[in-house]
Image 1 (cartoon, rainbow, N blue to C red):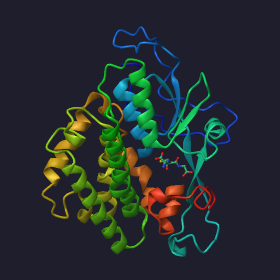
Image 2 (tube, rainbow, N blue to C red):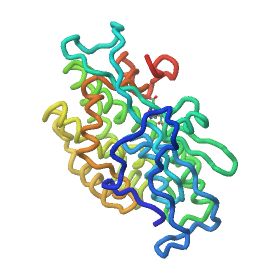
Image 3 (cartoon, rainbow, N blue to C red):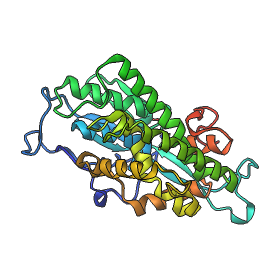
Image 4 (tube, protein in one colour):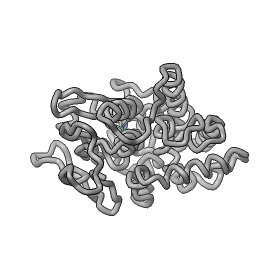
Length: 323
Ligand SMILES: N[C@@H](CCC(=O)N[C@@H](CS)C(=O)NCC(=O)O)C(=O)O
């Protein structure tokens, strides 16, 4: 193990950006590769720079892939939140009586320098300065880099090109059919829309469960796959829906027979050491996500959902900061 993510060590407060001081890096600097528990990859290039954030489920996908293969990386906590008073724009949809401050992202200048869209996850190769973005692509990149460096862990994507194409399509499907509806349940203001989003999310979970084909992981695989990595950060976070929206939003509440098999998959995945060490503290995440549940989060995804789009349909211009 080159590093781990014990939630008790995660920083409790983040600096405001632009900050004259340097950003805190987490996890702390990597131990030497000769650490006895480490299984170094065949060549030892410098660690990737990984712009991430403890709360981000998209970035969590990338973390899962990096940790699965024990790819060395330097974590940069690159997103935080500023509270700002409402602008008074009528499109800000909080009733006047309950107006509280809205939450906007502040972003690490280093992140913005290599990804002007300011999105995480962003991976940076410190040798070539090449950059990768988009969580599903970062999972693939981590897998390919690790395998080319002789990772001893099983691949996350299949080797066969047709199977790889199918796995990519399945990850996209999980993203649209489950993960985007998670934001719908949280951000949409009216009960009927929230319930409709949860019903769609449940259908997405049912379909994913079918794709386990009775095996341990996606496609009947005996080990974690890229498709599991696409879903897992959201599957882990679904407890927040019941908390903020009520018992109808508990997984399986729609009466699915698939729920026990889904739950068994989830527990199996969460128990993997490479997964367990990536999980954020549940109470802390619950508190974090309240700004989404109360419609006060002004992120691109949050803004897209508030204007009636799916989370995966956010537009960098329309839904960008200060909108
Ligand atoms: N499609 C992107 C979405 C990533 C995303 O929305 N990340 C959030 C943090 S959870 C972000 O960077 N937000 C910055 C913003 O909204 O400006 C992916 O899959 O990587």
